[in-house]
Length: 479
Image 1 (cartoon, rainbow, N blue to C red):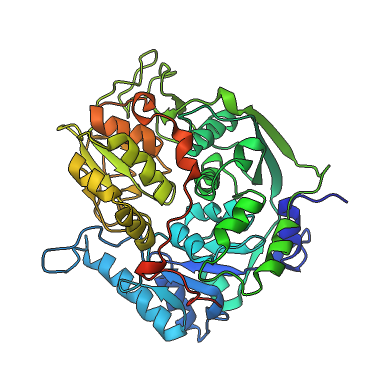
Image 2: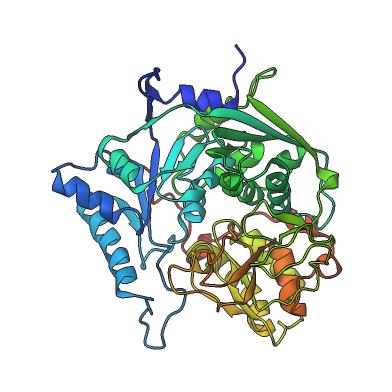
């Protein structure tokens, strides 16, 4: 019987099958943890006298509550004492239980969904969980990756398994080629607009077609990252030569890489496999997208007219969204904070200045991305343009570290959620690609980047920066 990518990964991890009375028991290959959702789980385990079953399959980082500024005296300005306590407790728990943790002294520290793939901890065919909504990011590698709640974090720490009923399957086909200037962020916003924020509820989405096959791993991660915004449990893209090339030489890549590669490539969906739901889009129909409302499904082409009133956003039906005044531009988050994203922004900002009315904040997704950007001199372009170049972290995506806007301000953001108050009380959020964000920073209004960016596709030819000379690589962190 023909099986899909999702079927193959699911079947390989079922410890006990699902029945009408009980869910399946699913084995977890990689548990990613951060400072926000683990302290409570560890406290419960300690109170019950339970140990962490597989610390070697658990990987920790600090990202949500971490400051993205450093004081002149070298101290870090935590937004609250609680934020600092969260960070310190995560690192203390990791040390106590023998968990590999990337704290302030690690050159690999970063947003959990950025640094995991960078290290090669994320691999095709794995089951991956994290106490974070956007764990679906790792599905770009052909992994079944999904977010879990704090109670489930405790369950996985104690058992390395999770109770779960098998989701339904959904396939999103995007055929054809994207036009110049159209990015992966535009693709996923177009998909969510098409299927709706509940269109994927109860399903795992597999993204198929030439559009995704031609994407870099960074672009695929952007797409899978926002699967949750369509209501899906996870998003997946079949591993291929692009996946293999990305993982080769990573610190936690398998020692027997050739054997692993053979297994990974066998995961692709079989010809003739079926899905519970299928959706088709044409790549050439997708334009640069922006949101106009208060969830990611309320998105539209940047050159269009707002389709409906939205009082919170102060946007009226029938008016152009391009030209709307912008107060802040944020490039960062687990959706768009990788080296490719900053290359696009630098291309647009080179030789130009951020509008005087705009605050531009660029936050790399990891220490590795920061090193890559600075090795290539892109940060000099940003600083010359008037951008605030920050330390790695989740930052303004959710604002748990104090990086927020002021009430009434409009932020053009490369993050994944535009909910009311997500970036601060009363703040209005417009989701967009790095190109649109950079162009809007220059003009001070929502702006189509086409006249600034030239040929976007030229950025897809870049390979990963070679960082061997500055201390990255070498397999130190292999299991």
